[in-house]
Length: 242
Image (cartoon, rainbow, N blue to C red; front, side, top):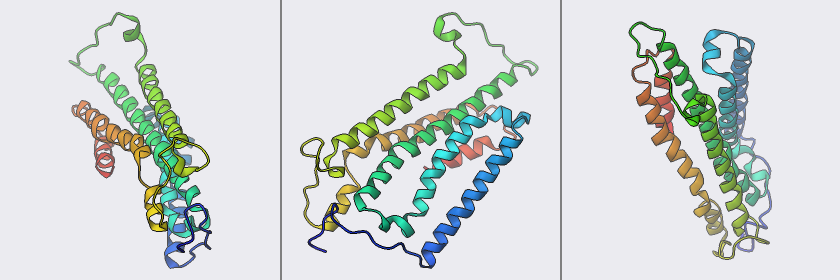
């Protein structure tokens, strides 16, 4: 093994022991349940409760976050069947793109739900009426402003993720920024180096932003809304789980 590096390490057969079979079975079962629920919601998409929620944003968030989750489940049985550098490439892009973008769409869906709930409060007795606003930006619909800001953040995240991968030579030794290559010599040290480094900071920053800044703000703004569907509890649980 001392003669191998992360670039020359051969692949291994899949692990089809009891643990591997459990992870594959659990992942397949949960995936079937998730997509069955999505199909049910799509079939009943004209229901007022589902129209209030906004299915496109919710489905986008669920799909991206489920891709992140399912890849975590199949690491044990199948990760050894692909080259280790490619495995870390997949991990990098899933952590740097799929997971953060899924969180962004999740909070976009929550923000839409909060906005619609506040609009409904205007029809209740003694509810304060929104005053007309002047100015071009103030007159832009809320959802257009929301999706513009979130869309710009998603674009920045994708550009930062791809750009840092292209600059980092440890993922592709033939090109990239000098000084970013793997400098340790033993295989265990090289594996550790693949999984850490400055190129991971956009993923960490994005999760910090959405989980510990945006989510608490949404929860605080929705505190006075009569929550009959457990939205606030679900959001708090998601925030803590991150």
